[in-house]
Image (cartoon, rainbow, N blue to C red; front, side, top):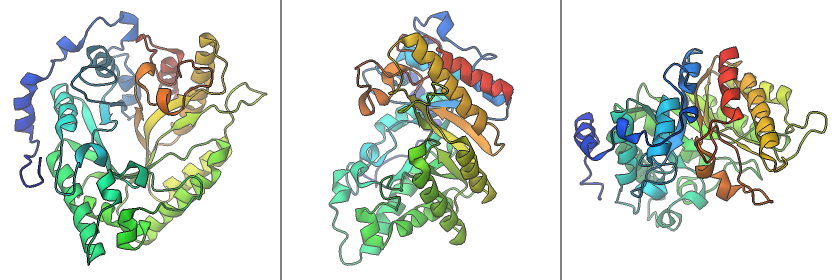
Length: 387
């Protein structure tokens, strides 16, 4: 689909397309009752009692499998538990921008229609993942011509305007820029765009200013994976420097998205839990909110590599680690939306990207691969209840 011929997904168009989408009742499937939240007992209801929303990443595919909105069992869990969803990959440049002048929104549109049909809010992720390994290949090798700054700005402006216009009125919160920090060097990452525009900061700032022109009252988020484990100290400091720079340069950033892929790579022998630095993490959060930023948890899950294989033991310790983390995060009234990066273990990205050495399934989401609620789910509900 060319940029000149795409049609915005207006509310009327979305409603017209709903006939092709499964209705909520048809999505129920054969989900065991114990695996389903209820309106009053859902994680979203628990979050709402604290003034927040609970949600999850979802996918889209025509086969109706995986963590997709077309998978009836998975969609049922999401509808039972969540008040907001976010596309896992369907809005990223690799999915939507097959060429410099071409857009393909088929998979993203399916998520948007499903969310609208079912009365679920929708976040945008992401307008720019500023890492070369996640650029479409054409962008890594793009010839920016005689005026590279102007051409880079044109590419970015076209992309941000096209996406935000298409979902105007439905998506009001965007991860404008995702993961601009190199975890190894703790500097901002260079890309073809930053080489064209002179610096990574020039690209990032331009993206936020363009997004603000499009969304005067929208929530503009910088999203990254700094965390409370010891090996994230330098990453946290790099993010603070980036956030401070935004304020100095009057860049319109409203919130910090804390991905929250928390990790149990090494255990504390005293507690049997993962090693984490609560005091340092609180200092980091204190500095962020002192600059006037709101907070979101955008991609929560738990990496359980260091835990023994026994499921009961693993689930108990993951739940405990989850509760410790949520108790800290929920202390901050600036924290708004809380989203998991998937609700069911089988479809969580950790199975492929951070597998266990023993070959067992990572158990890092609220529901098992058999759609059974796990102790993690109850730990999250309890943390909301105590907040």
